[in-house]
Every structure is written in C-alpha cells, then in structure tokens.
Amino acid sequence: MGAVVDGCPPGIPLIEADIQRDLDRRRPGQSDITTARTEADSVRILSGVFEGRTLGTPICLLIPSHGQQSHRYDALRDIFRPGHAEATYYLKYGTYDHRGGGRASARETAARVAAGAVAKKILERAGIDVFGFTRRVGTIEAEAVDRSSIEKNPVRCPDPQRAKDMEALIREVRDRGDSIGGIVEVVAVGVPAGLGEPVFDKMDADLAKAMMSINAVKGVEIGRGFGVALKRGSENNDAWIFERGRIRTRTNYCGGIVGGITTGEEIVLRIAVKPPSTIAIPQETIDRHGHPAVFSPGDNESARRHDPCICPRVVPVAEAMMAIVLVDHLMRQKALEGLSGP
Image 1: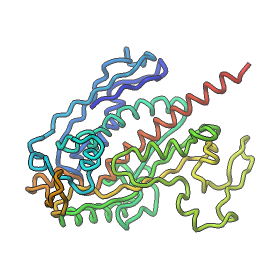
Image 2: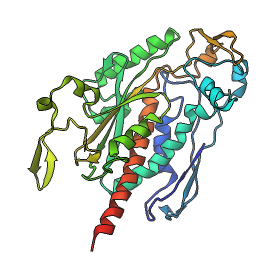
Image 3: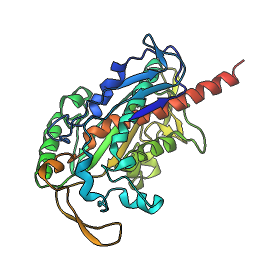
Image 4: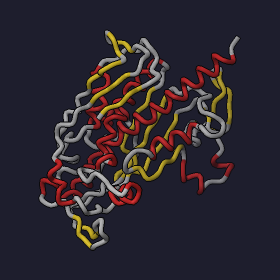
C-alpha cells in the first residue's frame, strides 16, 4: 500500500516514527480479539522529506505487505461472499479480484492512516488535536470518557469497566463463529471557528463523505445526530454567548458545526460500523453464474484471519480521515484570510 500527500507545507517536522505510531494502532494481530494475521505495516518515506522536515513537495509513503496468503481464496474465485463487494464490482466492471477483496479490501485503510498521520502533524502546529475511541459494541456502550484509558485496552474504549464487557462480548461472538458491529466516536479539540464552506463543501458534509468512504461504515452522525428527531427546538438549539473574549455556544448539541461552518467548540462525530462480513457460520449465496452456493471461510485458521469486530482498528482510520478533512479546510480558510487582508 502507499499514499502520496500533496500540498503539505514545508518545514513540518516529520519522521517515519510519527507515521508508524498510528499504523501500529491499525495493523492486524494486535490482540486476541482481532484478526490473527500479522503485518508489520512498516512505513517508508520515499520523498518530500529532508533531514526530518517536509520540503513542501509531494510526500510519497510506502507500506509493503508481507502477510498475504492469496491461495486461501482460490476456492472463492467464483463465489460472491455475502456482505462483500465482489458482486457489486462484478456488476460494475464485469470482473473482480477475489483475493481478499482486492481493491475493496480494508487493507487500503493503511494508506489513509499514513496520510492522516501527516495531517495530524500539521494540525498539531495549529493547536488542533484529534482522537477517537470505541463508543459502543453491540448493546454495550461506554458510560464514561477517560481519554487516558483508550489505549490501555484492546477495544480502545474510554470506559475501563465497559471495556471489559465489550471484550467479553466480542470473544463470545467470535467463539460462536459470528461477528458484531459497533459505534466509533471521533473528537476534534481546538478547532477554530469559521472552517467550512457555506453550501457544497460544508464541514459536516465533507466529514460525512470522508467517514462513509471507510470500509464497513454505514452511518454518520454529528453532535446529537439522529437524536435531534426526538427533540423540540427549545431543547435542541445551542444558545450563542460571548465568553472569554469570543463568540461561542453555551451547549454543543450541534457537535461543533452550524450551517456547515465550525463554531469553535469540539467537533463530535460518531460512525456506525457494521459487523465484519466474513464469519465462520456458513451463508447462502450464489456464484457469478447465478448458481446457488454456500460461503464458508473453511478451516479454523482461515476464520481466525478475520476480525470478529473491527471497531478497535477503525478508530485510527476515522481519526485519519477527520484530520485530512480538517487540514484541507484549515488551508482553505488561511488562503481566504490572506486574500481578504490588506
């Protein structure tokens, strides 16, 4: 896998270790509740950086794959796996790569995380911090948010007690040969007011598009999200106030965005992550000729190559996508302010 990051300002401190930290959080084989596949996901910076600082030229990143086992997919050459994209790729192109999902594989998110790590370095200079966590697995939801606890458990849950419950649920589902979905939350702190465009490139629209482009994400909500459908205006409106020298909102039901433009409060976003499609339980399907077939990953080792819940590994991917969108809008706003200045 690889990525090219274009438009990065010069002089940003950047070394491979800065990118590797987030790749290590995304990589497979982190714990016994994720896939047993192993990938080092070691990144190499091929261009755009000299003596530890960005040059302003395109940054090329390379992440070699070493753990692929294409032969395990030979029996699935003609079968459309339920929940996977072979069928839609076939309907669009008339062909597809059956080896692990091909272009539709979640493996491509490694490139997003690598690029997002560069974006985070730019945001760091602007005082913006992005972090994510698993808010919910199945029916178990975090009731407390202790940021220091997120990386201390394999689920990446900010509630230590609920983290244990989530782990137990994931193991139970895995042992039954099934999978489970959940909700990942991403928060951006220190975002200035005024980012985002009024109509087509609204901040919330661009964030939603970025998040929906992640494999397995089936829904996005910002602030109260779908909860606003249960509220009245008197309950949901954020009152504008002037405090500590700036205009802000007393509450943050909107999740930091009004009219597609940031308010200066925290951006709070949640994504619905579907259960991984490859499970040990046999599933009815068809082959590319329309004949009935049964899909099963086969032996136990093959089944263990797939995550029973991908929320923990989605967290750094969602962080990366938010960081990339924020950097794009930050640069647009700086250009606007520069053009409107004296």
